[in-house]
Length: 475
Length: 155
Image (tube, rainbow over all chains, first blue to last red; front, side, top):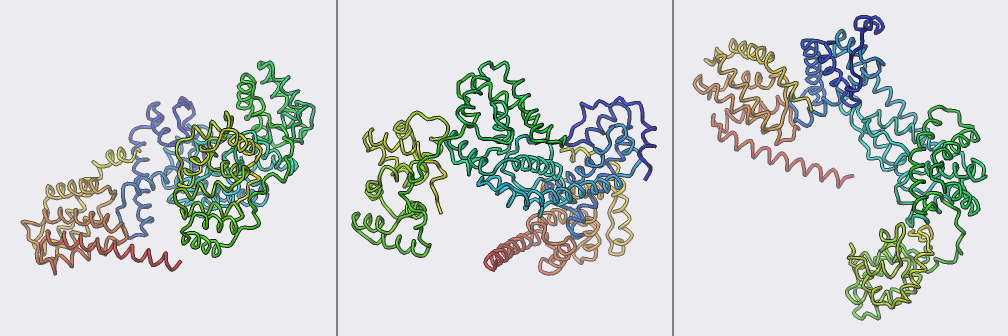
């Protein structure tokens, strides 16, 4: 192959408008722009198109393992996109589009394609290595999206990604949101960028004490009034923000626990919203310096988080809700609070089925309730019973009637999960306002609560307020 | 997607080459008294393009057309008056069958099946061939589902 440096001399002059070039579909936009500016003749573009069609014809045969010369339109388009992904990979390696045009003019499409496949393959190998590193050093946090992305979704990509037939496909559905995601990319380039950023985020979070991190997550869940374990949010942002807040309020960069005193200082600092930007800028630089972060990519990534944080702080300061951005340490609650359902007493499936069958056989409501109350102890078992639709009509109310406020509050945390998020007026109003429920038992539960007097509802509401989702254990 | 645009732009020059390739097959088929004129070939290829389009398929060569001509020219039921129109119908039956059997059967195998059925049980009737192939595709899909279910149970 002719060295690219020599090719550049053919085309130097450079009047290709880079703003007309697209990251996705780069080669096609390059061909269009080359024709528009006279860098390529229509005959030369035609030759490239013919080369691409020949490649597609070859790939169709490879795809069908030589058994078929035709494929569905969807398959053909998919294969063509895979070819163009590889060709784009080759073209994008040239810093100057004019150089890329020179290559298109002088090299057979086949050669360009093969080079592109090599680049895609190399990125795929690097992504696999990076994934192994992330897996080895992953954070020990009970955040489902983070864990499932690393343990389940990313392996799907690693196992299914096809450099030849599916180069442009991202394959896996990735739930865990990064602090800053580059959605413009596709295929292995997207995945590698995702992994690089996840790796940086993970490395950053590992600089902090795990216990403090777990407490921060729990406090964040309390502020947002949701179960942080099942919600989609970015851990890195949370940690970075609190590290910034720590240095701005007299703490160390490696501390992410914000005391009420520190919180007071921060509220005072952010009173003048015009100063927030420069304060955060200072905070970020101090965090980078104090944590001795030297990798240029990571420092840049951290700095890129500034605009979003500044915006959120400004909005929060204006609405007097800074506590939703600055996560302050909450006092520990008495551990004895959520003991009404005993997690350890969960029965095995066989026994559970036996009791459910016996309950269904009983005719009298009183008998049924007695049987349930004397044999069911864990929340998990109660939920299994309720979900099994074994009870009918007024039997639900009879069962709920035997529950104390605490037990009703725990069920309410589950039934009113969405309604309880963020700021809510008060529990009786939520019960009043709720329209319908997905499951039958939930409808009966709401109906039951509506029959209670307001003071009882308020009392249940106080427990709802006090119980953290972490305290509700399902196993 | 730019694919249709590229196909369109390439179509014209490619068509000449394809017509030439099919004309060359006359050398082989004329011993059976079957010859296609350039106009008939153009019509066959036009019909073939329409069929591919309507069945949502893409084929960049004319391998199937060539194979259909080479296989069917030996059929005792083909005469010169119906040669071109039969080939057009066969293209439609072939690509329909390709879709209905979900691309699971190789081209050569399907063309063999068509030829055998056309020559034997259908005795040269295209209508009969269509209905036989519909039944074949239905059975094929049933078998495929059964195999899949057995696989699931075994897993």
